[in-house]
Length: 474
Image (cartoon, rainbow, N blue to C red):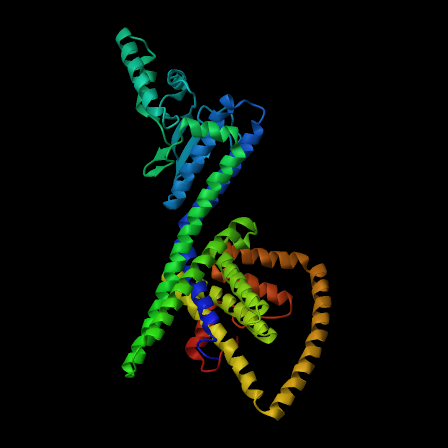
C-alpha cells in the first residue's frame, strides 16, 4: 500500500493520539463540567420543589445552589479538595447556615446567604445573633452597599450603646459578594442573574451546563489539535531529514503535502476531541463517562464515517470499505489500550505517543495481512485456492455465527448476573483509570464466553516483550 493510499490511516492515528492527549490535558475542565452538571441538577430539583412560590421568595433559595455550583466548578478546575454543600440539598432546610464549606473533609466555614432588592433589609436580617461569625453572602452588586449600611449602623449604635452594634459590625466584616475559600471563588452572582435564574430555571441550568461543557470541549479540542499537529510535524520533519541526508532535495510539492498533512491531522484531532466531549455528556453510560473511552469511540465514529462517505461517493470499492472499517476498529482499540497503559506511567506525553504507537502497530499488522492476501492473488492457482478458502470460510463463519448466536442467547439467559458483574468491573476500572482492574474485568467477560486474553495483565505482556523472541499474536 502506498503512502498516499495509507494517508487516511495515518490521519486517523494522529487524530486519535492527539484527541487522547487533549482529553488528558482537559481532565480538570472535564471534572468541572461534571461538577457543574451535578450542581445544576440540584438547582433544578430545588426549583421544582419551590415551583409554587413567587420569584421574589424562591430567588434566595436558588441563589444558594447557584453560588455553590460555581464554587465547586472553580474548585474542580484548580484540583482543590474544597467543596460547597447546600444544607437544603442535604435535607436540612431549617439549618441556620445555608451553605457549608468543607476542605480536606472538615468544615472550613458556615455561610448564610440572603437576596433582596433592599440593601437595608438585607443588612438588618443578616445582623442577627444566630448568624454571628458566619460568612454572609449577598448578590455581588449589592455587597458594597450592604457593607456600607452595616458599618454605618454599627457605628451609630455603638455610640448609643446599643448591644446590636456588634452584630452589624460582624455583618460589615463578613459580608461578601462571592463565595470564597482560600483561592477558590464562585465569581459572584448579581441580583439580576438571581432573578433570571428563578424566573427561568431550566434555561439558566442549560446555559451554565453548556458553558462548562463548551469550556471542556474547547480545551480538549485545542490541545488535541496541537498534539496531533506537533506529532505529525515531528514525524514529517524526521522524514525530511532522512531524505536530505540521502542527498535528495525536498521539492515544493513535498513541503506542501507535509504542511497539508499537519493541518489535516490537527483538524481531525480537534474534531475527535470535541465529538468525544459531546458523547461523554450525552450518552449517559458509566463507561463512556471516562474521557479516553469516549475519545476512542469518537475516533472510531469519525474514521468509519469517512470510509462510508468515500464508498458512497464511489472513491473506494466495497472490499476496501470493509478493510478500512476493520482496520479502524483494530487500530482504535489498540490505540486506546496502549495510550491508557503508557499514560499511566508517563502522563499526557505517554498518552500521546502510546496512542499513536498502539494505533500504528495494529493498523500496520492489519495492512500486512491484507498485503499478503493481495500477493497471493497474483498467482492464478493461489488465487483459486484463496477463493475456495474464502467460500469455505464464509460458510464456516455463517455456521459459527448461527451457533454463536444460540450460545450467546443461552449464556445471556444463564449467566446474566456474571456478565453484569464483569461489565461493572470493567466500568469501575475505566472510571478509576486503573487498567489492571479493567483488564481483569475484561478477562472475566471473555472467560464467560469460553475465550481468554492473550495477556491477562500488563506485567505478562511486558515480560513477553522483554524475554521472548516469538512473534506476538494479536
